[in-house]
Image (cartoon, rainbow, N blue to C red; front, side, top):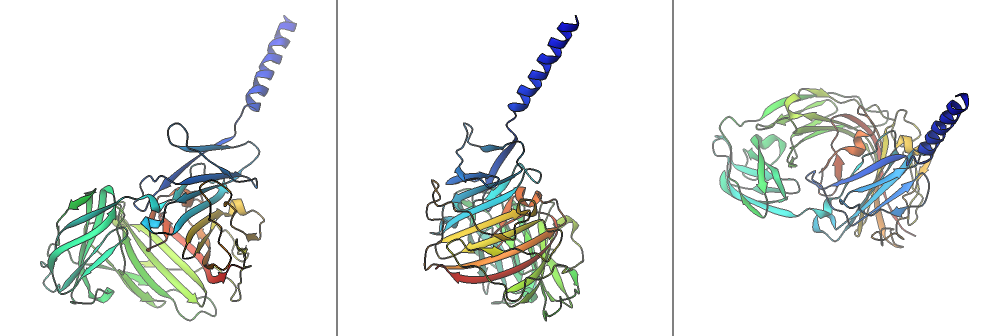
Length: 423
């Protein structure tokens, strides 16, 4: 009996060892989204384990992209190559580098895959007595209509069964600035496929509301700070020009028709030449209230420079504690690449060089060429969300080019920018 018990224990031990040896590690599931936050389909995908070689990643039988980070390793990277940015000739790509503790399900931006729909109809702001002109905003476009309070509009949006557009009214016939804005409304759940008809009408009660932006301190040596604000709807429309102010304070305007899932983006920035300190508050439109910025980051040094190369080398921020991630954008007339890498992935690294993906299928031509002029933006970020949230969030087209992750809460950042010519 004693021998039988020993044999049984030995067999169980071997089963445990066998199970451990077959442990594939941490499964990583990679997703991609377009400017409307919808699923996107990339041209090529690649991944990296630790500091190893980058390899192409093919879709599985269900069209998903997954791989495993083996036990004992936590650092990994994923890269995506997309078609031209919203149909342009530019090559768009993104790279995320982080750890399994931060996220096992990153979502990378891929705007070039979006099919474009057109929304058209009649826009009418005449119910506001002092209105003199109007504007319509979507995900990727804005159209201004002078000297009229009612008329046909036409605007493009990425195809979306629940698209949004924003209609704004102004009391000046030609100016569509902050001081001229008198009313507006968000129109949700538009089935934007092909050419879609949707009339937009403001009511007499669709006047703007106002919230205050408090004064904030400038860092030593900085002489100016400014406020701005915009509205991002759940359907992807982004209306700019809703806020104005400086470091002594300001005002931002709210509009009707918002609901949970729409966000106001409040931004304060203090520029000093090529560098700046920034504060962003992304707040649900149903919870919006007065706000005050705090610029708590240490700026990049005024003499910051980059080691010019086909893959430039960037010295990383060593002055700020508690960073969550870094963001880097490199653009030229031919390419547009976004990089995000977490503090956990960075570890003790004092500099960053974009990975060499040129030899992988689908990533040909991703490395800048000799003589190519590059514009770059390097940002160090500290937020009040979990670091992984910034890698998993859906994206929106914050400007005509930049896709940004939508994470509610405050985000502090130090940024520096410049240009180089590839030797």
